[in-house]
Image (cartoon, rainbow, N blue to C red):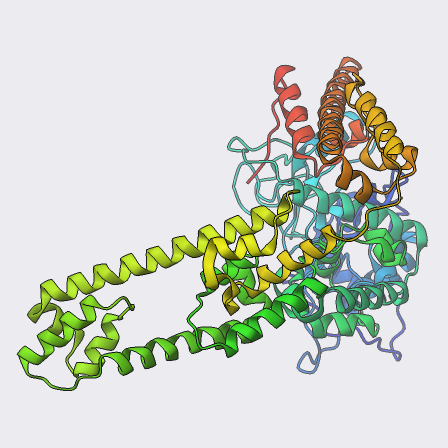
Length: 627
């Protein structure tokens, strides 16, 4: 049966003379743009209807001389590929052009994208349609037809009407074949029922990401129909640029970027860079991740300006070198310094510290454990399993001011920890409580010292280093606080250096000028940079001499920027409402494509999309979206 339209080989038999079967010179339907172009499958259905033939009979008469009797060595072609860019499409277009006398049937397919797009997963295997479009065809003078864009995969929304495409008949609830055994465009091949009715259970959430893909596919199809024959060389150049930018900016994280963010393997991207034809799905992924228009991507336009939607690997700084030197000192010293204290000293999260210096942090943790074990063995070595001796030994451990981990106690006395807990429950609990108290005291002491030192470093008060050292004792000069102590010495050194050569009168004049700026009641106060430029002084100079005034100017400017941002958002929302009302008053459905002609509406802007939906609800218009 040919309603499944599985053709195995299209090699011509040159020894057979064929008299073409004359078909009506039926004109394909097009409204001037690629997204409105009729599909070849729809044109075949209309040809069959005009000749009062079932589609299967027409195809049988059309192709029977072009198919070999022996199918064993041929390929299998499915009917949903008839609108594509493969052998099936080429043979169909060639024969129809000969039988109808028309030379414009190539535009009903994607043959021109043969060297640009891969045919893999390019088309739907079942028919899809926009019921609103079909309903509008009834009221227009054009015949009912099925659009080429409806058979393209990933095109799920009709952009003109903001309606998700249907794929099942509303009466029989069955999928429709691209080339049905019988029937005509816009009607069910099983019940001959009209497909232009909205489904009764048609509901769902509007998905901006999928809608944006449909917009990109419409642009792509318009561009393909306009340009004609295309190639992949510009796209390959775009991919090479993208790969270079990823290599330069992402460093060691490029594997995570390709696999998790882009979801296209690095090897596949390299094949595209060498000239392999990409799938439409991968083109849309690249366009979405890098925020590129699909036409710019295919033409290699503005590729150098794309943003990486991924966390960039940070470059090492001078402060990183200082931190690394400090951690190496901590690693050498025979003292237990926890990662929690180190992270507080360096003002980093513990996870950030481990990620930035993985090798050093692992060695420090290992060193801490070895020191704890060696101190414990040296002070309380006991292998006697006699109950009295073990009790005496545990009491010594309890009275010690050292932290004695319970796991090490169990290991030294060669008794399982659970047995120790059962037999010496009271004293073990007291040792555990003593460990907690010592850890808490040490932690609070370190926390207090670190906070005081950072407060001194961040403030403008100068204190002699000897005063600070006398306040906290010799512990301040240990390796643990060497990182902060060096910063304290650097601050002391800067404080005793000669100040800028500025007269006292100039200082007073700068202060008067800054006070006047602070007292201004302006909706758009000047920024700190503009103030520095007007006074002819650097930002660091003004921050050093007038920190409070500069901080006030910065906060006022920040508040003004936030206030203007909110005002701009509200103004755009009001403009969008007015645009929707204007379009609706003209008797036109205010779809997103209609609004974009008069208002710069970004489908990615969730706030404006919510305003659009709320305004339609106020007007009594229900947005019906399929699942």
